[in-house]
Structures are given as C-alpha cells and as structure tokens.
Length: 137
Image (cartoon, rainbow, N blue to C red; front, side, top):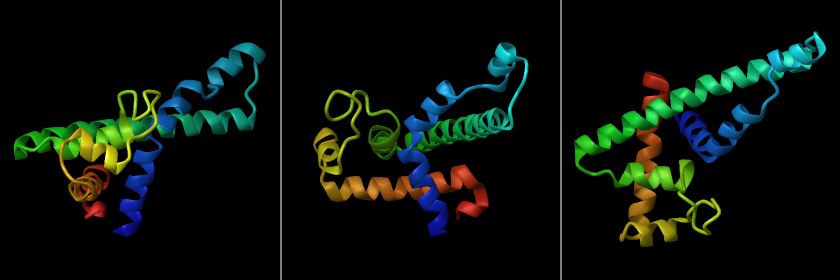
C-alpha cells in the first residue's frame, strides 16, 4: 500500500510536468511528415506520450470524482488543498506557480497545519483508490 500512495504523491507532485510533457513531446507523426522516417527513439517518445496522456486523463477523472465525493461529504477543503498544493496552484504562493507550503495553505484555508497535513494524507488514501481501485486499498 505504501508503494501505491508513494506513486500517488509522485504523480500529483509532477502533475504540471506531465502536462508539459504531453504538450511538448515530439510526436512520431510530426517527425514522419518532416523526414519521412521514424527513428526508434521517436517511436519511444510517442509511446511514452500516449502512456502519459492516458495516465493524466485518468488522473483528471479521479480528481473530478474526488471533488464530487468531497462535495457529497459536505467538505470540499481536502480536494481544494490537493488542487492548490499539487495540481493547480492558481498562481502559487509566489504568484508564479510555485506550490503552496502547508503553512501557506493553512493561512489560505483558515485552519492549522495539522488539518492541512490530515487533508493531504486523506487525499492520498482516497485518490489511491480512485486511481488504482482495489490495488489502492
């Protein structure tokens, strides 16, 4: 179980980099149209891009589902903490996309750092199930 949660943490920590990879990776089709050949390296990048696109789409759906479940529970703060900390910092703590610290999130959501840490831990646990099903339990 720790491995799955670690994967969730790493996937969330690198969410914006996964998006950037999808946007910027060389696609075999682009290469083929330019040079009429596709090297094995370009094929590998294209396959990695497709894998990343699939995983990120799954992440987005899991995050949307998590939001709905938090809304049903009557407490959307855990979802908002995950989003601000990892996925969409809305300008970030520095106004340039730098992720928020737990102290900054506590100030933002008018709670203490222990609550933020609890929200993050709960997010990891719940998202591991939404990402990986029974393997995330």
